[in-house]
Image 1 (tube, rainbow, N blue to C red):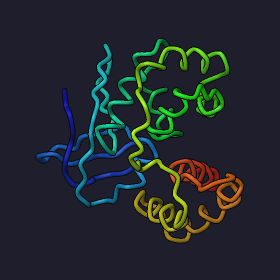
Image 2 (image 1 turned 120 degrees about the vertical axis):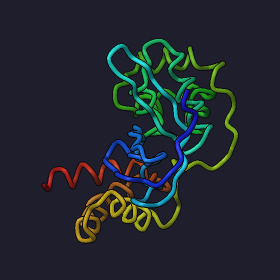
Image 3 (image 1 turned 135 degrees about the horizontal axis):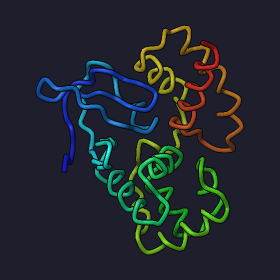
Length: 201
């Protein structure tokens, strides 16, 4: 198993990064939260989980070991594959998922694309004794109370967008950030900003 990859970031895309390891470019599938912390040419170290299928080998990358562990634990629930597990971590950081499961918060799971009411109920039952209690450690997906504009702008620049495009995308998602009813999550805003930019092209 490949436990982590470490090296300079060679390429960035909306859902993946390429990390150069010993002269080889390793493609790693990542959530927007993880991608928002990466910059072209800068050194990074990502915890990874290798998913083996008959027709593919896919490496998933995470900001830390805790996120990787939750990704793997989520897949022990029936009907949860790597893509859905990654989608859950794109919407909620590990502690938010632990809290949702511990408190039986259906709405938090239904907020994940691909999970309906029945699916959420089933997941809450199956994951109840698997994820453990929230550890309280800050994660990259944790709500950011200030500076979300700067973080989002920097993430878009890191993905290769022009300064003007990044500024317009930040402005476009500002109403969503202000309507969140609490501190906005940069990962979710990045996903919305990328959708806005894709529509504009």
